[in-house]
Image 1 (cartoon, helix red, strand yellow):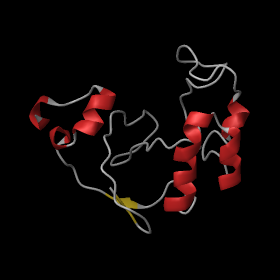
Image 2 (cartoon, one colour; image 1 turned 135 degrees about the horizontal axis):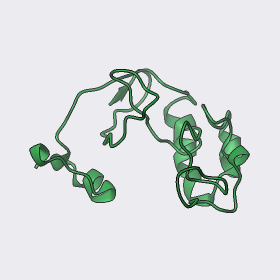
Image 3 (spheres, helix red, strand yellow; image 1 turned 90 degrees about the vertical axis):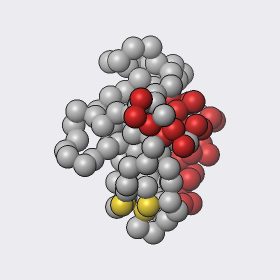
Length: 123
């Protein structure tokens, strides 16, 4: 995954979301907004909350998230560094332009060891 103005990343897409079009996927970055699904706060529609002491408003706009690097400080501690990445490396972009190509996840164990997902064809 290469961003127009920023670094290249190797990511694993494990969910394309029901609200997306062809060749679209969600890149989940802390502080980027909860989006259509929310299992983070005390009012989740999709199972137990991960951050029960926080409300949806603490995560910024549902679509787009926080607006400034300073707002990352209102997120749970373990999410702040990821939120700050959005402002330091992605210029604070919401839905940045990218180019991408498929690679085999089998060559990137740090991805599938975290997600637990690996296609047979990628072994």
